[in-house]
Length: 105
Image 1 (tube, rainbow, N blue to C red):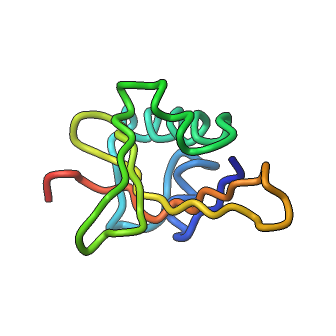
Image 2: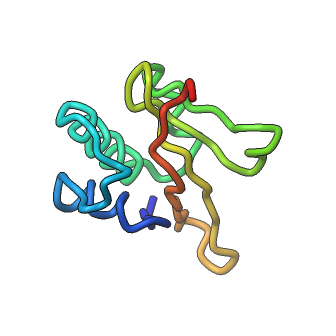
């Protein structure tokens, strides 16, 4: 999937391993797992391929987050994202990463 970052701090964390945004500071092990998870998202061709990776706990969200899906970074954090398929090119799926959040807050 092609990866698009909706927020700058998400891109900074992935490309630089850190961000200047004081609100979104994470422990180094969380950042490493985040980068690995984004790499895995990039390596699959469609979202349903994520079901093979049970540790990611891929799920479509509902309620006020309907239209989003999520995968786990670890037991506490998850990546929320939205996917789009191009109507002209069936093979391209864009994964728009919305948030890296504490699942329990």
